Length: 230
Image 1: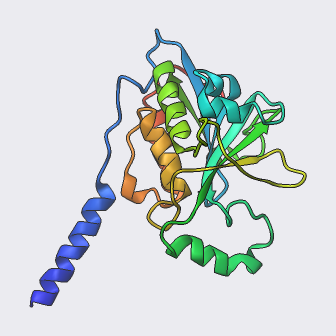
Image 2: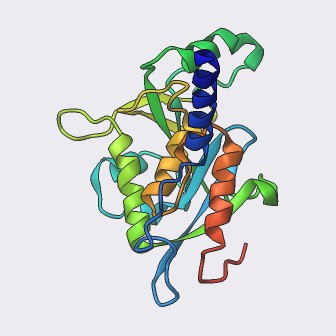
């Protein structure tokens, strides 16, 4: 009997954590009709989410993030993502990287990187409509999102961002992050934390999957008080 109660309690705890919601901040999101706003896009490649944000909005305020952006190739938009410092950067066939993937998932404390990939054209063009979601952030919400990205960047003694990697033939650049990667803190958790910083409500214990982050953004977009042309 005690074992049954323990199992039932564990199932109840898991169910409760799955529905636990971190509330949004209505002072940040959505932007009111009388407020200026910034449109960002959440993009889903099937298992990983990135945010596409206007480069000019990310540059505001200076600091390590703006300094990192100045090292990128031209482009009015920037894709921002986060992941393991080895597995995330490597683009070789997945079949040869399974052991490294297992290490990234199950070994705590893995080094991580922030990706910044400049886009000269529409950043959503490669994504199906169901794999992209526009979000209209208030200027304060955009500033909070930008601050959350910047807080992830590792800096040297002079406060400069630390370049970590680049891929041949690819404009994406990777910068060392202060955060660690493992199954308890994955790429989609990180993206959801950016949305939370911008004022959106999230369910933190369910953001393991890209689908959950997309659902979060989809529900939040219904709160937008301004029409978005996509």
